[in-house]
Image (tube, rainbow over all chains, first blue to last red):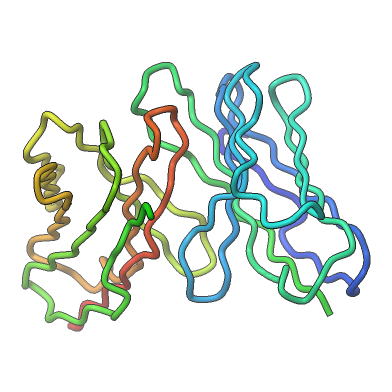
Amino acid sequence: GAGVSQSPSNKVTEKGKDVELRCDPISGHTALYWYRQSLGQGLEFLIYFQGNSAPDKSGLPSDRFSAERTGGSVSTLTIQRTQQEDSAVYLCASSPRQTMNTEAFFGQGTRLTVV
Amino acid sequence: SQKIEQNSEALNIQEGKTATLTCNYTNYSPAYLQWYRQDPGRGPVFLLLIRENEKEKRKERLKVTFDTTLKQSLFHITASQPADSATYLCALDKSNTGKLIFGQGTTLQVKP
């Protein structure tokens, strides 16, 4: 597809379970971002991948959160032992980053509900 | 600490009027600043980018200003329409490495 694709679009999980959220960025985009958005709130930065550089993980809220980006393309955000406060919309974005100032293209997000 | 602040209160205006949204930041020196639009249930969509050496940028009914001395950007929508109703987010590159940080957004409601 032409845009950033995220799956699943909705996920309901029981407290304590692990979840994996997937992001397919736009082909050729070197930068990939994960954000979290709670109801009525702004975007909370989680992690940033840029090419082959070490990812910036400074926004991950706890060691239960981790992310990988395989082959410089698809990314997976994993939340272990989910808690109710993890309920939010998780947004992925990619950017060509061929220059310093390029726009980010967002997916539709994964709505995570922990019950 | 480093902050990006947007008016958290919703902005309600009448159709045809100009909407002005504010984005203030502290303790950053960004090379550029971006504005995005977000509709309910959707991801943000890019609108405009303005560089530090640009005072003003226009795109159709949109205008953005960037005052690096005041550490402020203003986002204007002229001749507003009900279809402009959405949440508008500003974003900047915290460390000029491509890492985008967003403000909390301001919700605009344009009444017919």
